[in-house]
Amino acid sequence: MTTIAALGIVFGDIGTSPLYAFRECFSGSHGAPINPANLVGAASLIVWSLLLVVSVKYLFVILKLDNKGEGGILALSTLIRGAMRALGGKDPRKILLFGLAGAALIYADGMLTPAISVLSAVEGLSVSAPALAHWTVPLSVLILIGLFSIQKFGTGNVGKLFGPVVLLWFGTIAVLGVRGVIHHPAVLWAVNPYTGLHFLFHEWEHAMPLLAAVFLAVTGGEALYADLGHFGTTPIRVGWFSVVLPALVLNYLGQAALLTADPLAIRSPFFLLAPDFLQLPLTILATFAAIIASQALISGAFSLTTQAVQLGCLSRVRILYTSEHSMGQVYVPVINHILAAACILLVITFETSSKLAGAYGIAISLTMTITSVLFFSAARAVWGWSKLKAGVVTGLFLALDGAFLAANALKIYPWGWLPLVVAGGVMAVMLIWIWGRKRLYARIMQDSLPIDVLLKDLHKGKIHRVSGTAIYMSGKGLQVPTALLHNLKHNQVLHQQVILLHVMTIDQPHSNPDDIMDYEDLGDGVHRATLRFGFADTPDVPDALKHRMPEKARFQPGKATYFLGRETYGVGKKATFMDRFRMTMFAVMARNASPATAYFQLPPGRVVELGAQITL
Image (cartoon, rainbow, N blue to C red):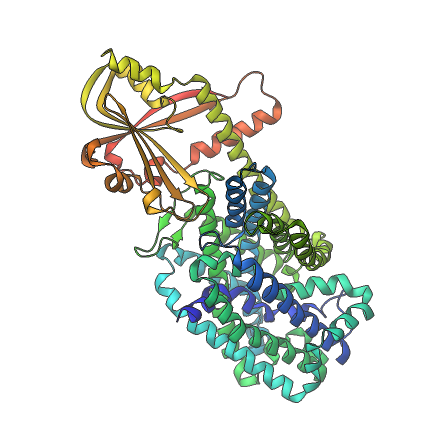
């Protein structure tokens, strides 16, 4: 059952590629001439791309680089950084930058995949019901509106239907492929890699556009790694080799066979594989498959946002947990609204999947290249490989990824720049947030008071105490929190029990229950506590304190008051133009960030916020 469930979540994106990938090899002015030899050659390139990129690179190698069960480029970068620190080395900034770039590109891909998947599926109407062909764009928009509207309900219940539907999809496209191959078995020569290489060299003037079109067949490869945490390695591998790969290969061979018999079928080779009476049902099934493929990527964007917020790469956003049983099922309203608007705008602007394919591929090819670059550092730091061994394997991966990236680079004009600009904007936002937090921390530390000074005053009885427990969120517990200083300044009292709480995110998805808290009694009713959450955990501070605080601390959750600082930011007179711009952006993000009360699950009725003006 786990493998069937994995079919619905993991393989939706790559499973809908036959809708448009093979067609693009021979479409437009860049397409190669349609003849039997070229058709077999194109099918060979797609088959061997699936084998080398997806099977070898991702399923046999990259999937082994899991961060405590979690996958994806952000998890990979944190794994490498953690391994390097464990070996006593520095935490290289370039690893973080690569991880952020990959994450930003996935956001860009997230707005393109739902648009091209749904649009290419609905375009089946031009074959099955030509009278309705002019409704393709309106229907696609309505489907996308419906898809994004139901996100707030969570995917738990709907997800149970995903596996069987996608299993039916793969079974259908396999049968359609067999139907075509039976009529023209000569296409089976595509399993010989020589036919693909011969085609590439023979049609050298079309080589780069051809590789860009072939790449559309493997764009879902990175999703296999990103969704690793949902199912684990074994179900993904079993699903790929037993169901997905055979179905995809058969369908691509079937499309080659169809075009051998009827080159005019290039307008929609996927749907024309089916008999006339099955084309409308196939269009409906393809639409459901496209929705499922889109759902997987939307859910991935939500999970990626949650990880980025936990790692301090994005400002806090409102995150809703849609399942009581699975922490991974989250809904992020702001990301949902942005993706919905972007997808609808793309469909209205481009109108056809063929035009949209011109902007599709560059983001994910760059992501795959970054994954290969990070693999070298991971193989060295995590697996302990020699430079030679890691370099050889990385070089082989980059030879494939580099060829696809170079081919997709030709798409930058007229529309390939779009996802790159989006990714650049997302990365800029993350870098500004990281820069602002670092600068803010340095400024607070500059004006802060050491804990020892406070403890001396308390020991001398200089500070009036009142009953109750106060919890102050602090940096690392070494300095007196700004909120505590403001409370002393204005109210001139301190609670009988004071907990200086530092919440940190570790470089693994889930924290070890035995290591979630460090506790220290500093004396005079002052306690220092550190809570550790994984980047995929829900930071429920009251629950963690309730179950982890030692009995000697006499902690009473119902009587505790949480004191938080709410800063506003000013820019120093000597700041440069770039610093002013970054600080303005940081201030806007901080002002619109989700309140710490909701993020840390704090009881609203027991939270006191103290404001402060900080000049950076």
